[in-house]
Image 1 (tube, rainbow, N blue to C red):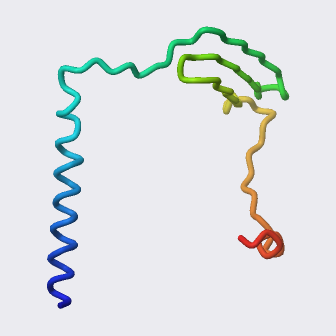
Image 2 (image 1 turned 90 degrees about the vertical axis):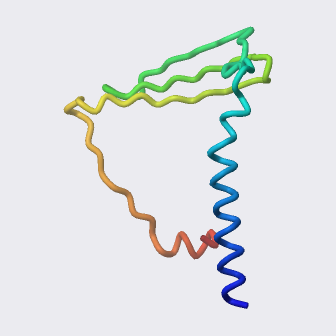
Image 3 (image 1 turned 180 degrees about the vertical axis):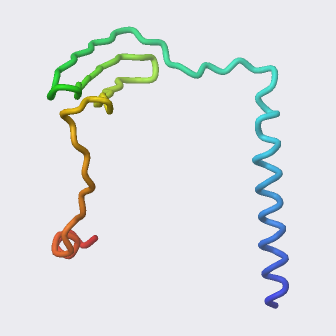
Length: 97
């Protein structure tokens, strides 16, 4: 019975690999649009601090409304300092995480 499970898992793995390998071939000869048509775009940009800029874009496209938030950070800015942050154990207990 254990051998049958291994054989079934191996067969499923090979079938999945074949599907993933052959699926791009189904797109040959078809035109696929990778980007939605934008009808309206509003973009605001704010400086958070020296070397850090926040951008918010609101777009109306044929795929629906998109709200995009971008934080640009200049890693060469000498006034910025990056440190790791570690969560406290009691916070995970309170949130159930």
